[in-house]
Length: 285
Image 1 (cartoon, one colour):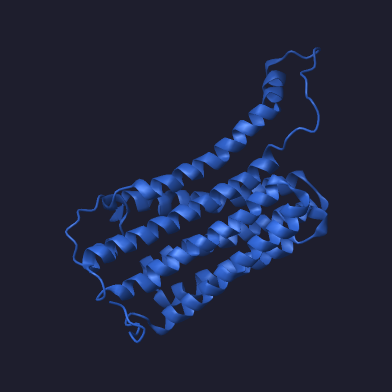
Image 2 (image 1 turned 90 degrees about the vertical axis):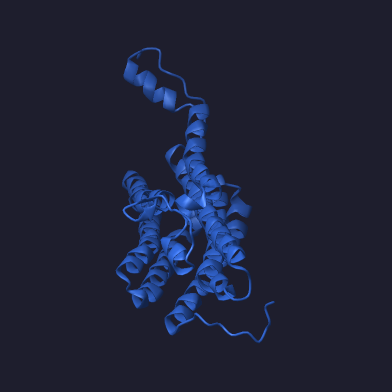
């Protein structure tokens, strides 16, 4: 049984610093959700702002589960059975990964609206130009085709989110957990990393680090004025956010635990500041 007078036994000073920073970040996520949902989506009814607001809500939920996984669940080691502890660790990690990819799905929803905006008027192929190139261009300009492409963009991260809930522990468990708790599970690894985590953290996350900012930079290049400024700052913001996420694993691998506690959260806080600067202009409504 867990009592109120039980003290934390695994916390270090830098764990407390890291927990404090990520708790602040979670609070900012919630504030951003309410701001963009109430001040942007409620007044404009634009799908862009709906996705942008729920992006931060999903990030907040994901961060709560990460906080439980890294800081609170390990403290239950002597309070519950080993099997319950391992199941709880895996549950919190799966849920954190699930909501992380739900947030990426919302990012793709934002990009889908920007890359494939709905047509304001009916588009017809000019009868005087029947070339294959023209037919292809006008095919992708159709509303139904644009909607399909937006659904595909949001669907791929959604599939990744669902897979995070279904992959077996052999493909998704942190090797440190198996070592720390002396588990008999046989992990299926590549370069010492479980296949599932390898795909999510070594392949897909770095892909997002470059893909999402590059798309925003492309949009910035195609526009001008306040939109160019907003897209450029969004590109920088997402790059800083994903750099902060990726640097956590890098510092972990290098065993620079003090740097891991401070630098990644500061990257994310800086990213949030950039998002504020890039999206608060009334002209963007």
